[in-house]
Length: 431
Image 1 (cartoon, rainbow, N blue to C red):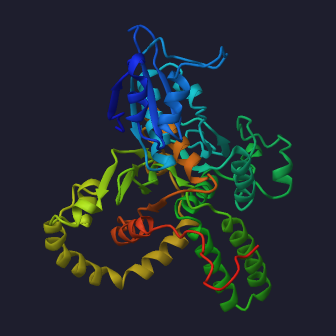
Image 2: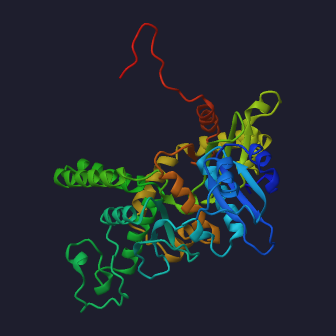
Image 3: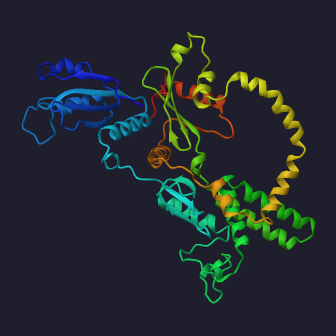
């Protein structure tokens, strides 16, 4: 937890020394009241000393500005090196001191997500801000609800799952909706498809979302190649146009939007100390304890930065285990390398032939646990990620942690920022 690690006692008679001992740097401050029953004052600021002077300095003239000089006993503060660290510190302290109203205090609103409700007999996709451990598939977070709805409309147009909110009765006398008339839905409402056919279509939606769109692209490419080999050029042309439509839809796919329980990433920020990088790990969308990489100390100590990262990001894996298992992995890879292409082609064809059991969908794709802080951490993550300009870097785990890329990103963040260009001698500055 990001604690407020500095404390000063406030004595009004010695306020000049009090203010001079405080740093003029960004951070989070908390004013402790003399009355034990009174709530503290919590705020984040771009200048801790200036904020303290504004709140505690004796006013020269009567003013309506908030002044806490007569009720404050001391101040707790933390100097932060980035806006992200400041935001996360403010969140943790507000949750600690104001458990009943910290969400409204921080204006914390759950992020917009695309949900596939797998508990329904005939699942459908829709946009929501509520996360529950109900076995549903949650995809996001998006920058706004409007962005989520725009993606949902364009993405679901690629499939034939239902959009309606009615209870499916499979009544042949039911007239259906506009989507069924446009052949954009399999129409389970009037028994236009079997239950197995609808389950296969839902499985295609889930697999496309989980694979980042590659599943659907490979499926259409395989169908286009098969049509070309069969000299059915009209069908191949239609599939090519469909592939272009799919590629256009997936082109706007955000880097952060993914299955929320697959959001494993590290956020790198400059620390408040010199030559320090703060690593904020996120596992399944929830932030863990940060790691402070003090490169000024590491340059004089025989410590491996990659080893420190491994101990935090992947504590169950050690270098000895990796070395002992390397030969097994290599031998198994040689055995399975020849069979892998056939297995991939077979899986693409089997998705269109074998029925998918809904219970298996829930166990494979459904969200099984949703801690209360999951929605809040996703909101903080999306607030930083979609901010402009965005400070720091984020790297996602794709199978394994990208340690080399993390080290290169640390080097970029520690590099001095370029200042304004100085004019060359004998030349006039640009106007």
